[in-house]
Length: 523
Image (tube, rainbow, N blue to C red; front, side, top):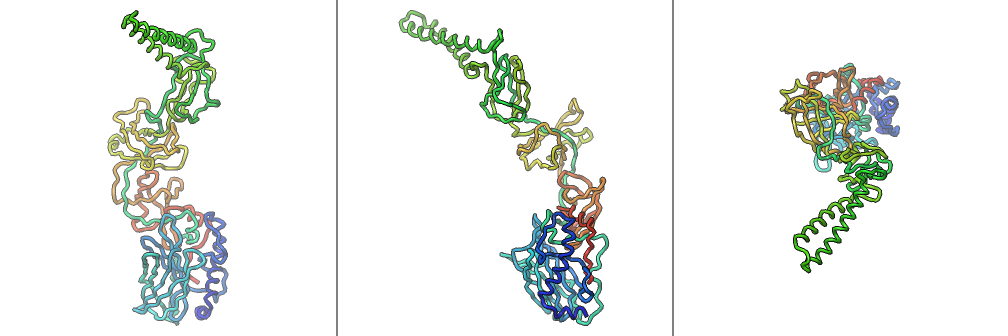
């Protein structure tokens, strides 16, 4: 018989037997699942039930999946019989942000049947996260199986009480692996080497959401208008100046040339101011001497001194901004050229807008809220938003933002109620762009909440993948109650305590397309 023959086989043959079965299915799935990593043939893991193996090599297996807060243990092993060796393949996953393979400790397996304890230490396989051992039960009956994970500082135990060791001659063994229909297999090796994760559904708080559109605007005080201070012909001081160019405070932007202008010529005004200054300075020096000799009165001297002060102010103010080419227009703050309103050679008059400089540091978010949400306006406390130019969803908190105002009236032009937030630009917020906003009100507890990344959408219908066991998943339709851009509140289709694929559901969908059968554990 098969089981009897297996008993006398050496341990190395057993490892190669399992590995050989795993190689074939791994090759099939790697072709269709781009996220899967290729391992050396000796490291491949696969759970295909039958791969054209001879009848005498078919074996019955069982599997068990256990969870703790930090770990998942998925184990496959030969059906337990008294006096016969059973090989264990133990897959251990750390339930962290990366859903990673367990590599930092040891694994002890304890079989307890009616007080009879057998302990084995599993050996680390060449594939991280997989441990092997051979266990030969000494007593039949029902009992428990304990997996003791030995970490650096502490131990963690996961156990199951549903273990049955059969008598050596017992042929009445149930089909332990008969799987439900509609299950999809996705192996641990594929999960560990992909952007993949699972989560257990627990009650969470979720705010009611108002969806609206809006715009990114410059914050008042963060934008400077560059105004022409004199009439003249525009000369660009920066070669190839264009919108979006960064300029520093003190940089010369333009020169207003007065050449060819008969009236209000800035160069003529500067020359006049220089002559007046020199004349006033000369008069002041002369009158100081006359005052000492008491030839002029103190009143006359004060008038001369006042005239010198006035001429000095005019001259030096022009001297800072006027050169032999004309009046210099200087940037008063650092920032980006948001708008460029003039071109080279254009004539401008005093007060004309030449350019706008924006610091782009603080951005004002204006959200246009439909009037139907007037009664909910006072409940708005925060927002998520997605710019039109990206799929990234931002939170107000990650940009150090805050709510600054709720509209008290309807805007004249668009008949919406404006709500304003401000955020610190991290360099990815584009002023003037439009965005979709998810306005959040006061959160309500006890909601079933899942990340948007868990959803699969098909023509407006949503579904998720529920983890049934270690490597088996089932597609489940869900109804969405509300969406804040990052998470959704589920109205129906899921229950607390279930585990779902929270990251990488497309990988499971690809496995479905591959037509890979579910492991039924029948050999």
